[in-house]
Image (cartoon, rainbow, N blue to C red; front, side):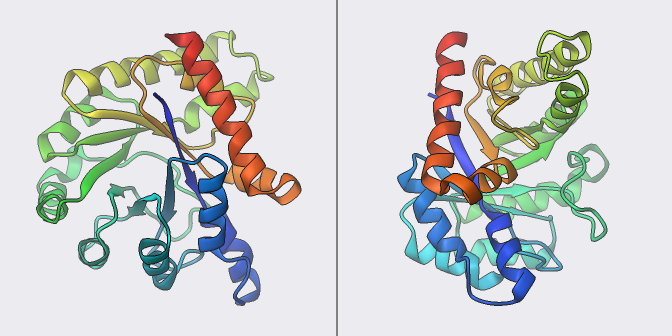
Length: 251
């Protein structure tokens, strides 16, 4: 059954705008859980632009929902993950000048370094995921370094969907869906878990949620944006409904 991981980074973004104590990401995680979220995702960035170290510690200690820690593959971040032991750690590319993650991790060019980082986390019992583009060489490299989960970057699909006027049957959108589908098949054939995420929202989520074998979607900005008006529980509940509806139709 398809699951929803809610990224609450931008709850912290609002808080950090005033360097105060609210809104509290831990409260957001609890509300998301009550709305039906299956997991919580946070990205602890090198520049600490939103989520802070203390947020991750509190989420680990105070919530009863699985935690996915997104991070760069640095010694500092691997050390933090080994100490806190989230249920899943996901390696993502990271640039100080980007607004958000702009593409998938290039595993092919840094296999040895990433294999070591994956091994350190796996030794601590942490499920390791990698965020990659829908490219077969990257999928194969993910398997070689020991990743157990691949999250396919759905940004290109989301941008094509928007440019096509939200027409899921336009050739450009169909082609992007095909790429994600093909990558997902390769991931599963290599014995890894197929997840997806990035730029998914209430309008474009269903064609991705309908893909065979997809295990989990990670969605943040759209849910936090909707929550400003409807509350976190309702925002999560509606996204989960859309996902489940699409997944059931895709069976």
